[in-house]
Length: 438
Ligand SMILES: Cc1cc2nc3c(=O)[nH]c(=O)nc-3n(C[C@H](O)[C@H](O)[C@H](O)COP(=O)(O)OP(=O)(O)OC[C@H]3O[C@@H](n4cnc5c(N)ncnc54)[C@H](O)[C@@H]3O)c2cc1C
Image 1 (cartoon, rainbow, N blue to C red):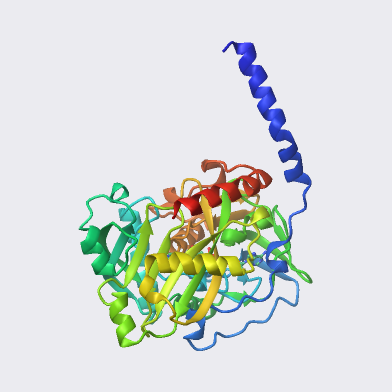
Image 2: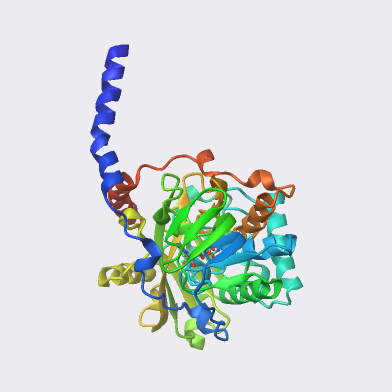
């Protein structure tokens, strides 16, 4: 092709995307958290004593650091800022209840690796820090360490050095669906207990905690001005810990996108069901090799816990009304994997949202004048949120740390297509992947 043709093709290509670009700018996004009704608590929160309630911000305040978002990340940032420099005035503002986002809605796997980056020394340091945090604060988070884990593959093509294959595997996990498996070990914990511990540690350290205080406007600068519906906060610095909610508040919109999941938990299994489940031998299972991956784990009271992917919502909406179709799809996918589960009543179910980046690495570091961020944990945040919160606190206070090089700001990540384009493009892609799932 001649140079002129290349230029013409490029110009035509750009023109073709122009309507999407314009629409992306003019279509008004719904405010994320403001439109959500109070999130129903997940099973984890129902199995611990009720968390303390905190008053909404009802006066204007002036703080050294304001943290936006009160999940694992925001509570880690608040705690480490205050322990690194107890003289600071630090406030954490949570739109709903503390921990009510993904942090209380996950499967509780606490690996000592970062998604897609293997078991590195840095990851081990991250895991050790989380462990030490629990120990130092006297927390029992039901940590099961070095516990058996199995990675299940539908086809042997995607499994490296499988230890179980074919009929042997099908017997081992009582599933006709899988053809290869890699055995390993991992750690898991009770996410609700970790949230409760983080809240208590922040309170004890002297961090100010505000619930039902959504930040609806951020004016970057020195200082940064934050606005809740009725009050304002003047902050020397701001940390955004809003994970999948981040694009909705106008940051990292071209670097991350949200994916929605559903979790179901059965009633406690009878002895016979328990035997059929093989949860005694394989209590924690991850599925690999397909896009619509699933997680299975047992709970302390012998329930079958099952997570499946729902999909993507246009304009990065973070709520999801589970439809009859979603339920039917979930049921069908479950029974395809575990036919023995047919008819077992489901006692708990909930929705949760994760934030994905294209390189599967979190967005962390300065993002605007006076504003830093730690978000985009790619569905693998129980340990990573804690470590990135710890590292971001160091960076914001200008303190050195051997792993600060892991913080990677938004512009270091590959771009994801504009919001409208990806909202349109994502649906057929997910439909294709769902079909491929069988
Ligand atoms: C179904 C599911 C299963 C998972 N399983 C695992 C697993 O087994 N292992 C693992 O490591 N990870 C897992 N994850 C991922 C993990 O849960 C997340 O990475 C982690 O909880 C992210 O924590 P966070 O604090 O960054 O975000 P969140 O917990 O989502 O917290 C963000 C908070 O910000 C608040 N917020 C948003 N906007 C505003 C605003 N404008 N003003 C004030 N507050 C605001 C939200 O209300 C929310 O509470 C799973 C996630 C899901 C959904």
